[in-house]
Length: 352
Length: 139
Image 1: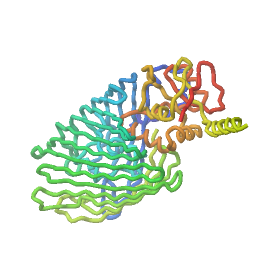
Image 2 (image 1 turned 180 degrees about the vertical axis):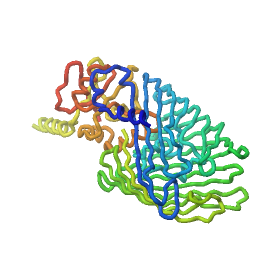
Image 3 (image 1 turned 30 degrees about the horizontal axis):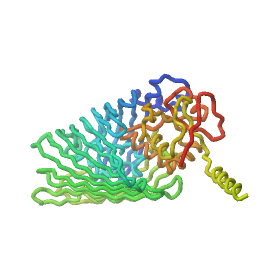
Image 4 (image 1 turned 180 degrees about the horizontal axis):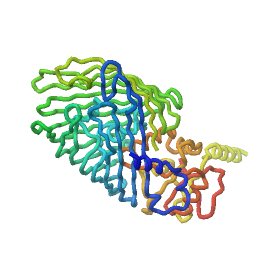
């Protein structure tokens, strides 16, 4: 951990110093990072790693190094550590989050190879820093790591297309593999032969975009037969003068695992230059193949107030009411009766 | 007399629309003018090459700078906070990184003077040094 902290301190050295005569290679090196640190507490049950007696072991931090060798070639490495309180998904070490090579074939076409952020919806790639999200984390219902992944080990092609009338399109296609959480997340499964794509349509109205995509992968659980996942997702986002609106929907065929559906909507209003308020409702459900169960995994209602002391430093206070079977202090089974849990997260996020 | 009035009005409008910053490039750069839309594309890295194929190296001011706010509202039509969110999304999705940020006009001029690919902006009242030229910004 100590070397990681040292690197972070070095990265925070004043950027202005780079305005002096410096070697060309140093200008081509970019260092960015973020830390999102929280205190979280729940009332009746432990949920999302948040115990009833509270925890400050709840954070997400990353350090990113990018070397743009020239206009055509770039190399990116991102280290990340995520702490999730008492969650069984807790991973202890600093991990290599990304390590990839990027080839800018043209201003419009980019290819990447290696361990790459997976383009999926609004928040999957950039969910970590949370300065792009008014809540500590993007909705777990849509971005449930049992069905989605943050990264892809493989190749990704991205194409930017212009169109008449102020429209433009961002198209991504990918192939590779990733891991998904198994059961309560203490173990992971390999998801192989994963391929998919996503299209974003940027409308003529600045800040408004509509997207959709799909992916398929073969999941190999540690103690079960291989199953095929086929997921469809759709998104709409509006980042307007004072209003920030977002909604996403996901529907997945989990083969023998049944059908998974998740959606959420969130709205935020910029009250003053520094203060904004946000509300979010998110739902996820799973239906077993024989339809014995059509269970709400999670129904989460949340309110958040953000105070931005700087565009890149934001304090957040959010309260959630969750109805479902996500509680972690009892075994999670689809036959369990839903329970209500309220939890609170107070966090600060800084990025550079 | 009427012609003089029209000329005065045009001059007045020109003064009213005068930008609070000047866009600067290396003196060897053949570009003499850019539109605001082109400048926005350069500073959001949607355009990465000068017309002669040379790589563009944009340099910016720090987010807390007043000049940066004026530049952002004039060129992008958005606040610095909005543009910061835009960049954070690109940075932490591994797609691109923002232009290098410098602390002062002097640092911008130093960098532009030493880099033929660079483009920057400085306060309109800042005198330009040798090796740097201002280019026009059109609506």
